[in-house]
Length: 377
Ligand code: AMP
Image (cartoon, rainbow, N blue to C red; front, side, top):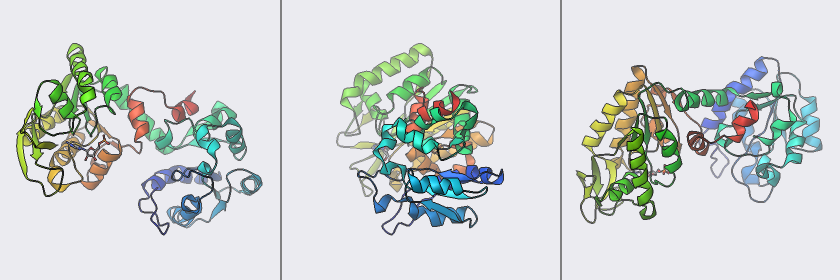
C-alpha cells in the first residue's frame, strides 16, 4: 500500500480487500496473525517500511478492534505474542521483507513463521506468482486440511478459472498497453482459448509496422516485428480473429497540449504518433465486445493518463459494462486497466476487478502460480 511522507496511507484498496477474510476468521472464533510485505526494503528494518504505520487504519477497518503489533515477525517476541492471542484477537507482525529470507523463499525462515499459527491462509493474490517464504514455501509445514485460500484469493482464482478454462463463447480478450514484448506470452496462450483478440494501445503499432504500414513516430518495438507477424499468422491458422484499431487519434508530440487529429492506424503521417484508438476503432471494438459472452481486459487503449487520449479507453470500459449488464462475464486486471475502470467509475459495473498485476498476467500466460499451487496441491 502506498504511504506518503507522513506515513499516511494514500490508497487502502489492498487493506480493504483483506478485511473480509480477517473478519470471517474472527467471527468463526479464531484469532488472526497477519503477515505481510510493505514496499521493497533493501537493508533490513527501515522506519519507512514498518507495518506499525498501518495499525491505526487497520483497527478502523476492523470496527475499532485493538491490534497487537509484533516488532519482529519471528523470534521470542513474535512467539510470545502469538501464543498469548485469544479468540477474536489480532496480531500484526512486522514487515516480512525486513528478512532477506522472505523473498529468497528460505525454508528455515518459513518454518519459523509456520510455528506461530495453527492453520495457514493465503490471501495474497498480488504476490501469488512469487515463491516467497510466507506466500508459498510455508505451505509444506501444514497438512493439506490446514492450508486455505482467503476470500480474496478464492474470488481471484474462481474468476480467473471462469475465463481461462471455462469461458462461455464468444470469448474476447482485450489486450492493450505500451509494449508487445510484455504481452507475447499472454497472447499466445489466449490464441488457444479466445474467439477474438482486440489489440489496442501503443503495442498495436508494432503490428501495423509488421504488416508494412506507416506509423510515423508511434511506439514501435523494432525487434518484435517478426514476433508480431508470427502472432498474426498463428491466429489465422487457429481461426482466432485479431482486431487491430482501424484508426487512431494522432498527435504531433507526446504531451497534453499536442495538436490532435485522426488517421488510419496504418497510415500515420510522418512526425505524428498514435496515442489513442480512433472513432471507427471504438465502434469496431464495441461491436465485438457487445457480442461476447466472456470478456478479459488487460491494458489501456491509449495514453489514458492524458485527457485528450482517454476517450478510447473510456469507451471500451463502457462497452464492457454494457455487455456485463446484459449477462456477459467480464474480468478486468492489470494496474492500468484497473486504474481506468476506477477513474471512469465502471468498477461496480464489471463482473470482477482483479487485485493482481504480474500475478494475473502470469496466470493468463498459463503458468502455475506458486501461491495458488501451495494451497491446492
Ligand atoms: P503497460 O504498462 O504495457 O500495460 O502500458 C501502460 C501504459 O501504456 C500507459 O501508461 C499508457 O499511457 C501507455 N500507452 C497506451 N497507449 C499508448 C500509445 N499509443 N503510445 C504510447 N503509450 C501508450
